[in-house]
Structures are given as C-alpha cells and as structure tokens.
Length: 363
Image 1: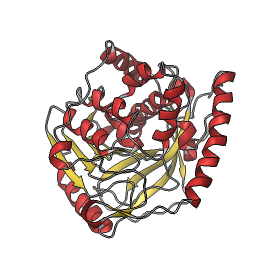
Image 2 (image 1 turned 45 degrees about the vertical axis):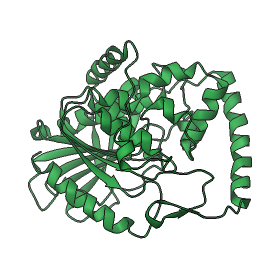
Image 3 (image 1 turned 135 degrees about the horizontal axis):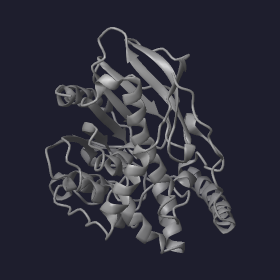
C-alpha cells in the first residue's frame, strides 16, 4: 500500500475560546454532580417507557405531527459553500495504509486503517474485507458521538468492503487540541464557518470514500453509507454533494433543524451548543450552514432513515426534519426510542437490520 503523507499539526483555537471552554468544563462538572444527586420521579413515556428527564423526550409530538414538520430553508450560499468544500476534498490523495489488526470479526479480515483527510489530518479506523464472499460493493460507516473502539458486527452485507473511520478528534483519530469529549468536540471552531470541526468530519467521510475506492476500485458505482447519530448528521451533510455514494442509511441523525436544536431541551452535546449560542449568538448564522435538514433537501440518492419518536439526546423533531426534507425515494423506519434503552430494543434492532438488508440489496 502507498505510504501516508506528512501530516502537519493542527492550529489551536483562539485564547478566549479556550478560556470559555474551561469555564464550561467547570459548569459541566457541577451539572453532573447535581444530576447524580437528583432523584426525579419517573415520568411515563412512550408506549410504557419510563424516564427521569425533566422534559418530555417526545416533545409533545406523535408520528403524524413529526412527519408534518417543515424543514428549514437553505441560507444564501449554502450549496456553493458545500460544493466548494467537496471539490477540495476530492483533490486529496488519502494514501490509505493497512496493517493487520488485533480485532477479529467472523466473515471478515480486519485491517487497521489510516488515511490522510483534508489539511493532512490522519484519520484512523478499520477496513473490513469479506472472507467468505467475493467483495462486490463497499460501505463507509459513520459512528456516533460516543466514539467507536472496535469495528461493528451488525453489518447488512457479507459481500462488502467496509471502511470504518473514526472522525477527526474521536477514538482512534484523537489529536490535540481537539477534545474527544462530545461536549467540547462539538464546539471546536464552531465560531469559524470554514474550520468548524463538523465540516472536517464531513471531509473525513468524503476522503474515506476516496480511500475505499483506492483500496477496492471495483466497488465504484456500488458504494453505500450508513451513519448513526453524529454519523447520521455528518452523512446528511456529505451525501448531498457526493454522487459516488449510491444509497444510504441514516439512524437518528443529529444536526437537523438547528433552529429547533438550539431551543428544545436536551441532554448531551446539544446542551453545550445551546449554552455557547446563548453567550455568542453570532454562531447561529454559522450553524445554519451545518443543518442536516437543509442539506437533506439536496440529497438525490435513495435513502433509508431510522427516526425515533422518543429521544432525549437528539430531539425527534430534528430527526424527522431530515427525513421530511429528502425529496427523492426514501424509506422510514420508525424507532420507539433513540439514545435510550427499553425492553424491546434488541428485537427492534433486528427488524431494522432485516430492513437494511432489503434496502441495500440493489447496491
């Protein structure tokens, strides 16, 4: 395999931004202590779900009202911004490098993978090559904000090559000065439209497709994408401009309908974004360019979306805004809940995996 190029160090954020982050870390520690000592009465949830959140993770919606939510319109220059960014990513030679991995996965040979993304950022992850079937298609997989420490086993096709990148700053792609804590990762360069970390994660997706096609060029025309939560939002932002991806699945996608995301009660990284936007309202204009529901208006590939009726971390109105914005062929798999455990979760995930096998069969 080709050797990786020289990878320069990333630039640090402005000093005042770091000061703000330190104050937020202190506030977050206090919040966690308060939450751990809070004994809220369990409130009835959807279909018998019980929760202790101080808000309703259904946000007063049912399936009918969620499907009626109007996605936001694109700000001026939205398409040009992302098309130019995509063209820059296409010019990158990722020079993928493979090495034997300690991980084992039935039906696949697992390789440790590293490739260069934009600005020379070293993206690490895994490449899975099928051992029992001829590899005739390929996938790039996008993980959630919890990170990923090993390759996933719930794969829809046993005849596919899978590129599993860890987005920049997370898990195997950790690198100073980017925090791998979701509450701070999501804020990295949020005040700079061209340098916001989420845009870099989209670059990692695009250069991951290029790396896949370099390692397995015969999969061209047969490339799919699957992303969950963070990976779902990153996927929506990236799919709209990348015709190399033939069809895709988004699971509880985040970053949808930023205007709602900034005001609906939530847990997780969304809280950090809300707090920052309250103190620095000028970032709202930048976040409009990172709205997964706006990007979904430009998606042309066949899409499969798993969206939840109940989700304390990624509000369902944002998830359904992404689905509603897709104008082409789309399939909806309604989840009972996202980012939340419930008794029927395993059975529901099995039904979802069966649906994905059908959806990706034509790939």
